[in-house]
Image 1 (tube, rainbow, N blue to C red):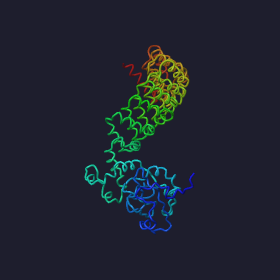
Image 2: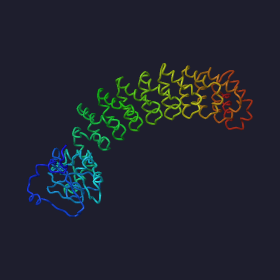
Image 3: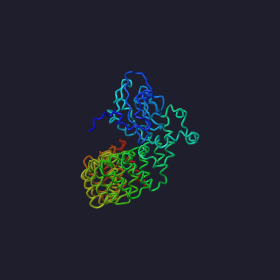
Image 4: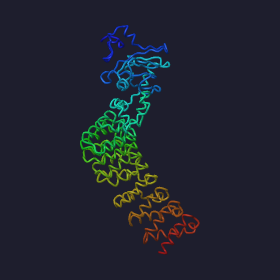
Length: 514
């Protein structure tokens, strides 16, 4: 390993404008010396000939080039021959190319700190100065691609650009990077000229609009190019408030192989797509992707990832929309893995505000053994589900499907508990649904149980059970109706002084009139 000092002249990759063999006298004669702060130490980093024609970069308050406003601004190059140093890092020899410092240096400044130390910026150490390197890839692209052409007088007078006096005077190049100027530049660039900043543009409000506009009628090459730029960050962009629109746009124009690649990137760690589904922006992008899937293999890749956390997604305010889409649009055999995980967590899903909707869809769209297993799990928790603010909707939905098999299973499971369920705020809705839609035989069985129950008279004046009795009066016939009417007659006196009892008596009077 060489013992050569990293600061030795021979280690620098100097531009042709510098003669390392010049005489000492000539070298001193070309220096500009300052003694503003004797404690300042200044070290010159090597120029970046391979990309910036030997451009150096300016200090914090140099007379030309980029003006630093604190440590969080970007370093840009200095346009001068003899370096001017004022309270800053370095102002060195360079050519007249107004580009930024090499991005590798800016992104990884800490790696070069030993080589280019700086001290004395108001007492700041080199590490604090290094923190000033905040590299903006979009700024870099603008300067690299087109900023030098802005010196052309004709461009100043063109309608598309108004760079302002600040730029013409070369006093504040940072103004050129303002949002308006960026938008003007990017609007005139082709997609391929935006290489390496597609991701950054997609996450910017105006940048996103520019990309969408350029993506209205993309060529195959442009689709391939943009996909290549975003594929490694597809999950992150889907979760972004602006980036998700670019992915949705991309999905709509990709071919089957490209969509398969997108699905693969999202599902190779299943947690990626799960997190996207649970994001308010990601859930839209995923549903857009699902809409475009035609291959069974693509769908199975998605389902295989979602089933790892189907119950968690079902209970999520954003994730449940993705599961509902799958259940409504994909075949039962494809959704089996999702339904199996829902069944394993049936009670937790049934009693959740969002999960109850997913469970209803599972019951409605499942078939065969998949449905049988799911229904068995629901029946095992039927009493508790009926009394839950959200779970009761699951049981009502089962009855509403008008499947004699499902309704019969539910009534058998709840049998012997209809009186207590009728008094419950939420379960009373399930009893009413059974009476109204389960058919004459089942409703008669439920009414006879209510009439024969202990303290049946309390049902007539209960805030919730009175609605059950009113439905029973409406659907009952013959002997069943007479049994119910007899119970009411025996308790008519107490019912007349009760708000809920009066409603039942009014119902009887209306039926007599009819």
